[in-house]
Image 1 (cartoon, rainbow, N blue to C red):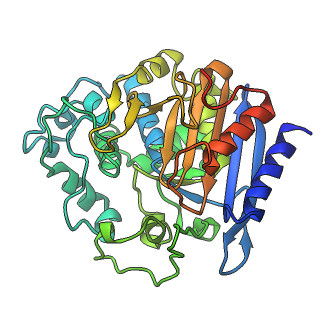
Image 2: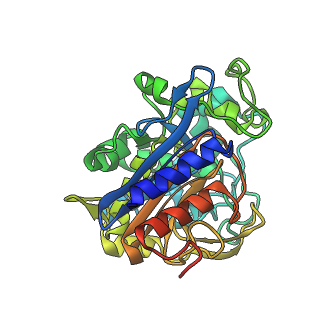
Length: 371
């Protein structure tokens, strides 16, 4: 049985057992798509099945795409990691943030991990309002002294810096400079075009089928479950660079390029030297926001034993609900998982951990925890 058939058998079993509703998994090895499998239901209300083109909310997997865009601008000499963010975005330099550097922002060291109280769905969907809210934040710790995950803030912090440097909003920038050239412009971005809305899966969280009517725009973001957000048209179409909407195939292809030194099928995204710089550990220890051990570079999580991305040389990003995408240059390998039942368990018993392990076994690589 080949790798594709082996993984198809696993994803179909997970759906048949009721462990998952709908999911996709894709993997590249040596620049070739060797696994592209899916199973289950995209929308239980209509019976629409998952296929390879179904779009999923990948949540924080988008941070890896945002970081890649920032590194591309640095590669071109347009962005200096050690310059203050305020040098590009003057409005950001208030309330003690004038010295926050781009490097610190990429490493989640800016000290502004949380959005302001009362931040709404409408704020999220309005680029100017969202970035103004981020610019007005006051650090919770002295910038640069601690690294604490910035779940939503990271996207607008880096995304608006990209816009100030380049002139294009990050959704347009990545489509024109990264995902479009890679052939995944319709399969990975920060928000879906209105015409793509029928491709998006319906998401659930344990105990929340998220079948209630869509919340009004003035609803505080913090009052909504992840599934209610994932299913809301305002979030689905908004440019939120901390998150992404896409397919496993698209996310795996992005990281396939990075796993091969930054180029795939004649399209160069970054140079090997830039990737090495971006994936050098910028922080290793207990995250000040999450309270858990992390290893991170500049915008990417780095591999850590005991996680799906177990090889310490790997890099990428996971997202709420167990989505993940990462590159493993040592094996010229990349993998991505997308699903619409948004569980939050990282353990050898979790779907994503098990799926990554199954893919690795199918293609002849060591398990996730191996170095």
